[in-house]
Amino acid sequence: TPEKQPYRTSYHFQPRQNWMNDPNGPMYYKGVYHLFYQHNPEAATFGDRIVWGHSVSYDLINWIHLNNAIEPSGPYDNNSCWSGSATIIPGKEQPVILYTGIDDKKHQVQNLAMPRNLSDPFLREWIKHPQNPVMSPPSGVEVNNFRDPSTAWQGKDGKWRVVIGAQNGDEGKTILYQSEDFVNWKVDPNPFYASDNTGVCECPDFFPVNISGSKNGVDTSVQNPSVRHVLKISYLRKQHDYYFLGKYVSDQENFIPDVRFTGTSSDLRYDYGKFYASKSFFDYAKNRRILWGWVNESDSTQDDIEKGWAGLQSIPRQVWLDKSGKRLVQWPIEEVEKLRDKHISIMGEKLVYGSNLEVSGITASQADVEVLFELPELQSAEFLDPDGVDPQLLCSQEDASRSGIIGPFGLLALASKDLKEHTAIFFKIYRAPNRYVGLMCNDQRRSSFRHDLDKTAYGTIFDIDPNLKNISLRSLIDHSIIESFGDEGRVCITSRVYPSLAIDKDAHLYAFNNGSQSVVVSKLNAWSMKQAEIGHH
Ligand code: DQQ
Image (cartoon, rainbow, N blue to C red; front, side, top):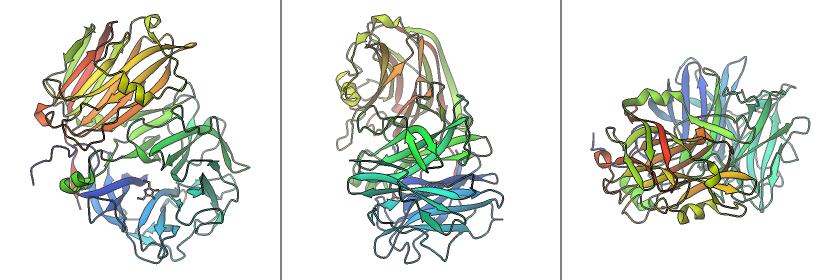
């Protein structure tokens, strides 16, 4: 095997080589997890013959790569097989896939595929339905902006429903279709949810969540008073995944979000860094909903060609509704903890102004770190009126090295020994009109001496409990990716970084505080992570 490249990950999902983008059709079926993904088998760049790559796993961490599952083969998908979703038809226990074909006229159509052999546990071969395409662009939808069928749900009348992303002029919409047999689909003339001035909606995902604050997931077709619904839309123009909590009005077949899309930083996102075209599925084995998202590169296309690959999937995240009912919570699936190896722990260390506490003894380039910071009294916090503030700009101005009052404090990950290179993941706490807010940042401007990298500082402002005594931060660090979960998973930021010094054994990890008020690391646990096992078939 060739020498490991410095930016290749050790426990994130990647194909052996070449380009990957969206996760497609994730599902759990008869003891096996399936992940399909948008893949260009020919190059490390996106291309005009995209296929569905396919891998299987028993634990969502260790994977077996299989042959491509869906490739262009007919007039209805000759120019690419784009994103789509799997649905398991209960009773028949039959998995089916709806995906977007780029047809011979370069129009976008939806196609149906089914496993050739249900007794193959890996479902290696997929056959396409003779009636394809099963949906063609309806009136009021641009022929090249009609894509990404969701997982289907079944209404009380027994009919199946799916939503498709679409665009008409500046309006972005999700279109609802209904079917009795999964083959013959009828469009609903009224959009499921539409918004002006957004451009195309990509990869809509629609699912129920428990209102009780329980972490359990809910199967996609469930409709009852103990659930609310989530609609996720990937807005291409913004390159972000936005989610809406709201009400599914099933007799009108539409979705009414609690808060409509505003286009400002107050819209809710799964992740305030890189995380796009995500998709969730209900895991029958463990009664949870799991979310996957595509994390693209921040280096140049030329760098990708030289590496021979581009694109990662996030670590799968369990997702549920926060007890406040106001946002979702995401947490890395518990199986990732199986990779935890060498462990070190720090308890009750006070971080006075200007502290850098090294977390030594683990492989800091391939690590899982969880830290709980004990906060001072909040009254002393700086004042900030968050109205109209751009959190990304604030994260650049409020540099981790600049002193504040409560914060900045957090972690310096993928840091060189002299700290000249580092990615700062940190919090600041502010007093806002009638409330307290937190700012969570991921500042990668010093992450590498290399040029031609996107080093935008990411960040978000979120409400905190005025009696908050502690704030938690967990980061999954894997060579060129850092996935961070703040405030127990209520705020997430993922970034891609390409250090020039802080590589493998030369990477370090620190906890720091540059706030004039001390914070206490009441508990820090960090582990070196083992490499996930990736096999081929
Ligand atoms: N990627 C796919 C499309 C989808 C977009 C093409 C989102 O189906 O809209 O690879 O990243």
